[in-house]
Length: 287
Ligand SMILES: O=C(O)CCC(=O)C(=O)O
Image (cartoon, rainbow, N blue to C red; front, side, top):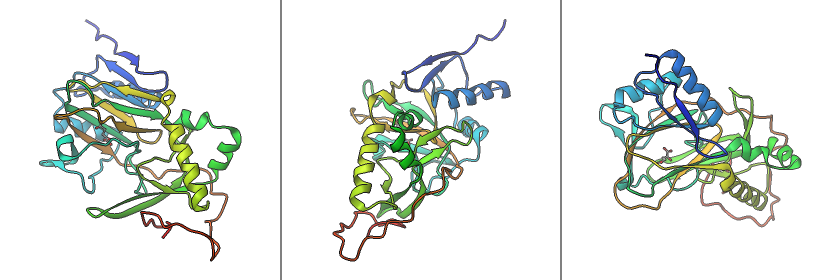
């Protein structure tokens, strides 16, 4: 009997598709190619009913997309340093919009999250389509943003400081499309602008990209897997639940984000310019 065709159902008008009829532990090269195409097209793809995905199979799946990250500080599965454990009871509630790990020079290209325990209600995850976010801006705004960079910072007592500078608009190496590449959790400032200009512009861009028309929202069932393109989306876990929620994630190591060459030099404040220190100290940051 021929194998039934996978069923692909869009999750929203903006991005995301749920794919039924695929066993992620038994992907032929041909089927993996289709998974990769679905990922590039829908930006985040969901595979329900993958309870049997073992840590070894999870790692093998991630490696088909590229080399895997060993996360600098999140807890790991025993014996599998490539798999991080996201446990709400251990404080892992990623409830602010973010692109994964943009404070590093080569942020991940993709992540694969296997959710094993989820609340009876709540705890959905949302993603945004950062291509659409960029494409819906006016032409003058896109032109301005194309010539800027942004600094992304992680700075906590546990981790110390990590920072990286990336184009505000990155060009996807596989699709050639431009997407907005700033994110509320990590982006500190735009070094070519004055502090008030940078704050106002970033605030506008965060709000624009978080608009519901660019989002999808996924209601988890235990055992489901989400695979997302970290180069063209951001995401957050909705913090509207109590009780256990646990998952395991592998992250595919990144490329260096590319965009247009920056058009302006770093902003230099006048000696007497009214100037507010930032709460973070970034590599090129405001002190
Ligand atoms: O827990 C989730 O649904 C999302 C986790 C997350 O933000 C991440 O893996 O980067």
